[in-house]
Length: 233
Ligand code: AMP
Image (cartoon, rainbow, N blue to C red; front, side, top):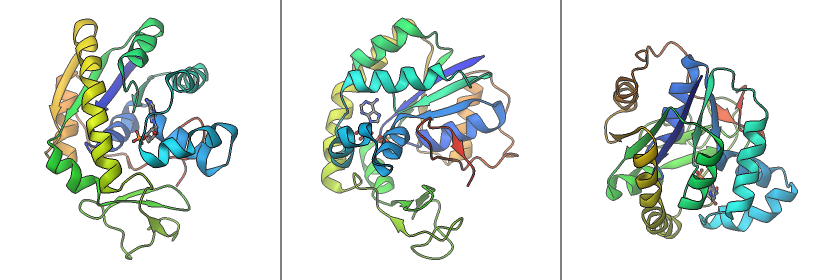
């Protein structure tokens, strides 16, 4: 059983690295942001509660986040372990998590602000199947169209320069105490996230004594259910 948290600023590659790690190690990749986006898209009660916050890039309340994470982990579909991405985002969330779960490692992706801006503002999302694209690193074959389902590619509502600046300020204010807390209690590896995705993945694996990445499994999964589990795409 392997249980990891992956942390890092927007655009640092948390989703990509989690998916690469999850694919051949059979870990369940849980993205809290994807779970909330699913609720918004499907007009659930939770979706109505979080829509404005998600659109503005502001944090959802800790109690609701804790409920969503607890419910997700209670599914116990993670026989070989999990990697949780986008959580915890502040100290109360980290404390809640540490009270309930033992972790094997905390992956802390580090990326300078100017590179964050460049990457985040190039992100696109398929409005139909949720597949992620990036106009720098992963362009669609046909401009503006999803390679998988042909759906229209859109900018995530919260990927605007203003929302990003606000998120960066909020991120650094809140995440440093989380990293501190994990450093005292858990096994944190800070990884330079500027390199290409395979190099970053290999660095993570070396840092945690995991088998090397072979690239044998297609790691581009998209979380399309409230459980945040990989959907068939
Ligand atoms: P992400 O995809 O991780 O950037 O998350 C998208 C949005 O979901 C964030 O801007 C928040 O509104 C919300 N969200 C995701 N994870 C958390 C969390 N741990 N705590 C509070 N809000 C969150």
